[in-house]
Length: 115
Length: 112
Image 1 (cartoon, rainbow over the protein chains, first blue to last red):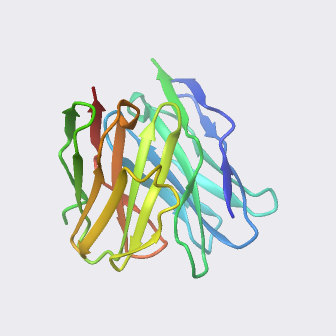
Image 2 (image 1 turned 120 degrees about the horizontal axis):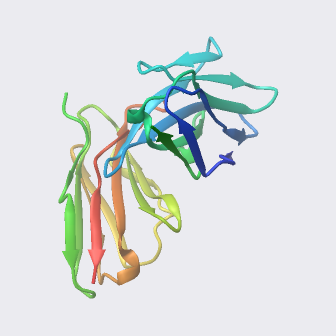
């Protein structure tokens, strides 16, 4: 079975400052990794994903995440945040091989941007 | 392309009533997932289907909850009888493979 840990439940950051949201996972098999974002009163939207290849993946709105297999981490970063980045961010993992394809989610990190 | 469509967006009903939530997945997607989100318990997977067949229903809280997927373009989640503790936001998601799940905007359910 897989598990995901997001240690920070809330992260306040000043506008235009950098941010890192931490995600660690545990799995006995190889996994795909995801970050989802949830804006108020909306569903979850896929932000970025690691499937294979380059360990650094980027989103269209300036976020990036790096897959670190030795540290079993997939931290999300942005060099300069904007007010519009205020949302809840969920890290998730699923196994790559056949079988139950459900996603295992972390408990979420609420990012608040301070003007 | 249309995304995952859920209805209704909001539902307020009295305890004991039957509640039916509906979901239309993205065309061509062969897996469908029902989630529940609350402040206390976060995001929970209730059940998921692959090719219209229930694969994992271990998250369904109790017999009051049931889900069906009669065809590839429609699924329902039913609660009968409903209780106040069922109040939550219910999400439906669909996927074509393991590479991404696409979520609907959810149904906000309030049981009085």
